[in-house]
Length: 220
Image (tube, rainbow, N blue to C red; front, side, top):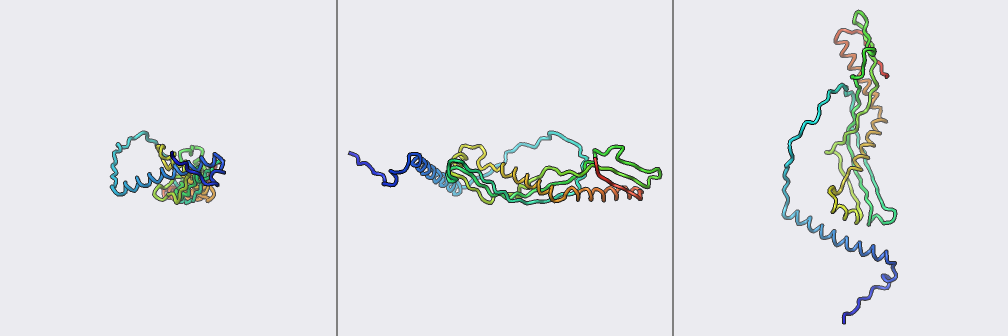
């Protein structure tokens, strides 16, 4: 006759759902221990990387009329926390600490300058220009300078990565970093600097063509 194994007294007093959570945590811990051993075996035997990418294909070409007048380099630390309402973070939840570095360009679209926006006197010694206000381009993240400092994931999230085509996806933190960098560019006066640089460029260009007086303004 097989002897029965008695549970500790404190375990018998736990609710059923608590016992189920503990059992699930134990199973997942054993599973991840096995996966860790598999990764160590990969390090022992080594891996090789082969680039079998195809050639890049030209999809479209467009002419640019923007004068890139200023560029700002920014860095932001993103702390993104996603948790569950009913489960502790150790079971389900993610937290990522990400350093995002990127660039924002400020430009003046010279393609929108019409005939009525340029006035030249008869002697061609004076010119008046009205240009559109400078605008900000979309932020561009620098992948070489952007990186995740720390990642915390619950057991269920780690298990989900096993069946995901893109485990450890960082799109959410990258998008958040780009948004914060764009906000910083708007608050840093980058467009004002771009307009001043454009004014200096236009004055230098027209004076080299013989114009002595050059007036540049901005507006719609």
